[in-house]
Amino acid sequence: MTIAVGDTLPAATFKVMTPDGPSEVTVEELTKGRKVVLFGVPGAFTPTCDRNHLPGFIELLDAIKAKGVDEIAVVSVNDMFVMQAWAKSSGGVGKITFLADGSADFAKATGLELDASGFGMGLRIKRFSMLVEDGVVKILNIEETPGQAEVSGAQAMLAAL
Image 1 (cartoon, rainbow, N blue to C red):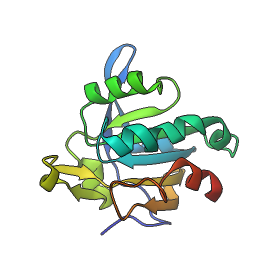
Image 2: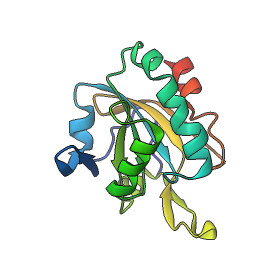
Image 3: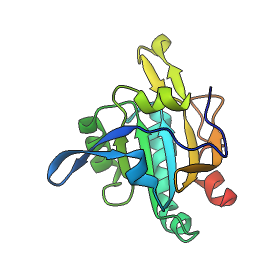
Image 4: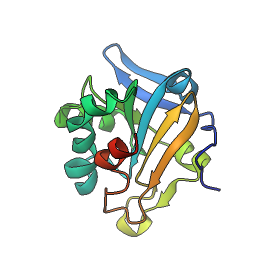
């Protein structure tokens, strides 16, 4: 079953790259007592993710945070090394938190998994954006078509805030 507005995010652990090396962050650590915009992309460096979805959140970072958001994070079924490289190449370091869901545990636990085997990409996460307050989903936008970032884009999230 797919997660819905009003649901609490499931327990999951993401891999992240820090200045001190590989580390982990749990959903609880990320969201407890905080307002977080979390968006998911099928793959780092893929065309829509790299040219549209992520850049929108970087460009509107200040406007989104001005609405009381503590953090903006992106999750993808990639490893933490790919996510770190994407953070660097996109200019997102220190702006967006890059979360690696390498085994798709979060994707499966939220019902947001995407079978992209037809494109040679295997199991991924659907393109989405959500506002999470203290672990509870308050806004949820899921794209019907993975190649688009309209309902889940930064502009749509900003308008919903």
